[in-house]
Image 1 (tube, rainbow, N blue to C red):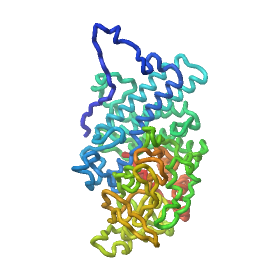
Image 2: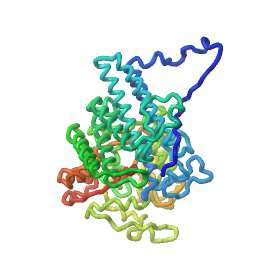
Image 3: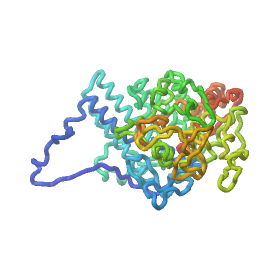
Image 4: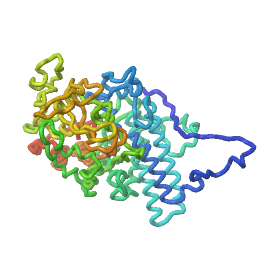
Length: 541
């Protein structure tokens, strides 16, 4: 089923043979030589930051995987705009094998490159783990504890990467040593998935035992993060053993192993929920919808991902996340570039929601799904903006889940305009098929959104900054990898497999759903079944 893949890890080796070896073999005078590094905890931490920088790029654009779903369209062809940009292809992230794990790695990246960069992350984590392990031989006291924390963070990231590798490719080669030359790994055989998942669990367990209860800095790992990832590994293993994995040759599911894994997963998730003083952002309250069309007041969910004074993560909902440095750091994120239009930072809207996404947001009055939206074209259907359930009739979106307001832009919704220097220019209005026009609303003249392509009548609002100071590639958004809301829902799934629906689990699910403002849903028992064989959409939590 799986083609043989060759591991190639960028190492950068250079061999010199010369009769002048004594002259050439000199310590650098402009950089810290190898013999002068790996001496202090600060050295170890500095190297660890290199791991975070690389591993961040493996996870902070996971929405590209959703291009394989019925909910998201990803424009294909990035970097070859003259020939293929703008093609409407479901699953565009994989069209022609394209995948862009990080904008700094350049356009034209291939899916196999993601495989390669995952192993690059493995080698970076192994490099830190191996060298800091040597430092432990001469360390003691607080220094030893600090070094063990560095190893714990690197092992947590290694576990994350291998969980991604096996979820995508099944059995893969397992490497837990520093690779100095590709010849050391190029013929490595695949390691069985069960062996790898147990090694991931070992990494998460070590991390749990050596990490602080609270992360030492924003974006770094904590005990709760290690437990949550270990629980997720158990949940994957339980799900695979319960539901099977027909694409993986030779995988034999086991109901016994499934039940053992589900129980361990539920225990880890419950530990996170009860023992780390974590809470949903703003206590899980929905906040205010604001007015139809306006953007001066937005629901709390919109601010969950913004790292300024409205969200310092003091409640701890974002259990593990990757930070981005913002302007002039070389560490900014390009979320706005992917999600926004030209009127928001001269962005390119590489991802669009389908109208099916809006169909998933329920009525705040009844709690039920609304009638399905009807895609209509105002150029060929004159009543498109007023017809009942039309996808471009603003009234079709009234009294819906607050998270929809925080996530999508539909006809006549305002968004904060930002120019290509990062300066706020005032509100602009999105109107389907009205590209860069003047429009008068309630006696006030606005510009409509300028965009390259608008095939479905929506843009995203989620991850669009509503404040200035940064260009489309210089953002400071936090990208969440593990949230308390995730843990609540994963606990509900794992515990349901072990003991059936319990009031405790139902209450946790309803705490997440409370963001919708459908308070009456607390009286309804709804059970959600999710499978974990592929990365999941994060747009609805």
